[in-house]
Length: 527
Image (cartoon, rainbow, N blue to C red; front, side, top):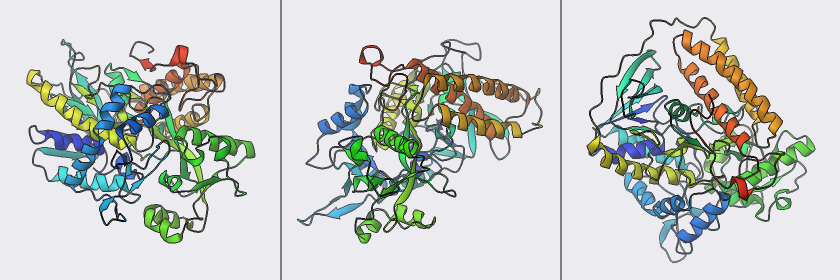
């Protein structure tokens, strides 16, 4: 059973389907995932002027001392093979013809990379990958796709009073009929993506509600590095634009960040200017907005030829035109927004969690690749490499897994239909606003404590609501987001230093002596 339908989940399904029966759960349409919206590309060493060692070095530098070096090396070394696999599946990556007449990949460069190594399909790489993988999954006879089905909670033998404890399936809500069914599985994989919807402003799709992380936590798994939330520096600032991210490649191809006056400001913050890692760029934008009382800053690529801009960024050009902005003539108003969660469910290099029978891959997992800050385009790389590694682990382990015992049916005998759904919508709105205000790009101990107290009250209200009323998709998502918010806050309070994506005014310096380690929390550390 694979929960999630992004690049990691679908790649894993295809890797296993030749030998096993696989069910893929998607709580929306199969294509609705963060992968679909990924613009930049996949980082991999594909050019003779580049090297695996250089990619490793860049990743370690971006991760601010917390990357697991063995994991970084393993994932980076498998990058080229995964690109070649995607090509076999039919992904149409962008190419160019060299001066010698050879057709080769068009590689772009993004923040933190010392070489051009981002393989892309124009500026809609995620959509090209997702469409291709969805087509392959739908045509495979061993894969059952259940769209509009949401996993609510994992089922473990421990919950059934049996030992040893292992995951044996999940309770799943059919969002159309609102019926709950139990699905048993000899191996379960959480590929549910991130939790950007815990913040008021995010580049993530609506499905990014931290479901896998919350379910794993309730099932007893260890969680790590939740304080490291990456805010993408450049999301479109427009009253009608919901989650439109402006690809980092715009800066990679020469775009400048400027104030309303037209003055560049990034050279004052970092010698790499617009190509600095995302945490530095996001904090710089946040600083300038607060310093001048601005609603936004501007991303300006108008100094490049019009044909160049349209050829390289057709998707960004078309989407911005819908809001009256011609990026070939107009600077683009941008603000930072929650984008990627570097923490998640603790796994090893095979995607195995601390709960037997349960695996996690993609953004929901914390492998140690990203450390305190994800380098651009390493996320899709991780999805693809970890899917293959996880498939091998599952194939090896299943020989020793007993048949799945009967799972008791979901009991709704003591609940009724909700009488006031406004409780859910109001608490959802309050949670996202308090997380944005108190647990955002720049933090303080006082803000974190305020957020913790309010989240505890919200969690109690939602727990009471969940116990008394029939479940709905919105209620389950809010329950999960409340849990994820608490994990982020508690983890941030534990780290009394500033490192990577976690920046606090109370402890502005890096403290390698005490905090050059992962922030790991386990059930029982706090209720």
